[in-house]
Image (cartoon, rainbow, N blue to C red; front, side, top):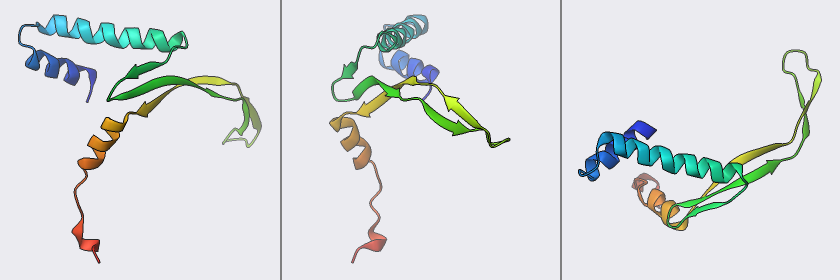
Length: 102
């Protein structure tokens, strides 16, 4: 699902909102989440999951062309951990394969 798909789905579900208002709401929400993560805060949405920042320590890699060693600096990267309800919902949507039953 893309951002525009999300906007369309919300506009369809909430008929009192215009497409423009829905776009603004989605943009504002995502911007607030990005800003919170950039400030190092954790975001938790009950039933969906949580977003946090993970630290990747510096390491040594290799340039694939020359084989030369390259130092890769430390990085802070966003991390998503799905909530229990989301994990169970995704797992329940898997088709049951009875061909392997014994």
